[in-house]
Length: 322
Image (cartoon, rainbow, N blue to C red; front, side):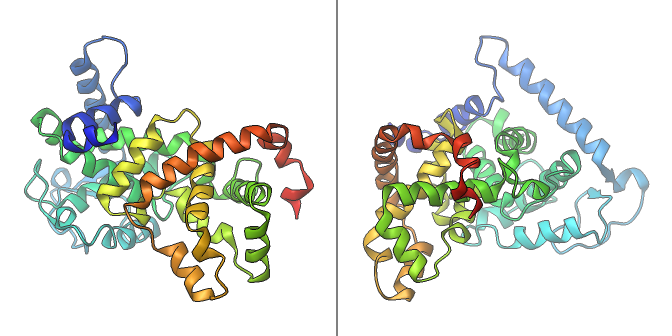
């Protein structure tokens, strides 16, 4: 049923807003609810960003924003630099992001993304900004930009902010640096991927070990940005269609990492290290359907080893403390 969403961008945009808790599922007046959220976003903007127009100061030139009315407290700040560095690399294959925003012709879509990420960094100082978050945001923002309804396409900023916020805070623990080695931190999550691979495919595990291939280094990017960078933007939206429907996001991401390894198994078992690395780095949009099928198979396989599968049991196991 995924293709329906592809042919109906407005439907996909609406489904995502429902799945990301932006639109209430009961029959309350959607518009009133959304208008309230948009007003709330304007307050966040007032709170976290200084309006230059208000201060009647001349805008300071920034690589991404020479004429935007909004600039952060962030002058020359590291966070600003990190965000800008990442944004410059966002989907360079698409003219969309460097194009002017439909809501305000004075700025580009990248300027809008920058503002969202700055506000998010201020609102969540424990996460702040983590490399790659731009990719998650770009996927959501782009999906919403394809909506043909002006009520939505003219308000991409607020809608994208709240949906992005909901998704990232759902797996908040993997972005908090001080929590990296904690029971729910990214290191432990990736150790779990390795442990399950060891249960499901001991041969592959040994092959990686013998060739000093560190699976968690590669899976780090898959896990933290939900595979957005592996595919074209169309592919990324397809994989998000699948991810956003899932109840347990962590479990789904864990399975997807395993599926990615399994569908590339033949190349990964090669003696040629170059071939292995290429296989890990190059995915194709046509891999997505296969990954999703593989996810269902692995889910069944893992249910058979249920007693070994308990994540909390794993956290305390010796395997996690190797």
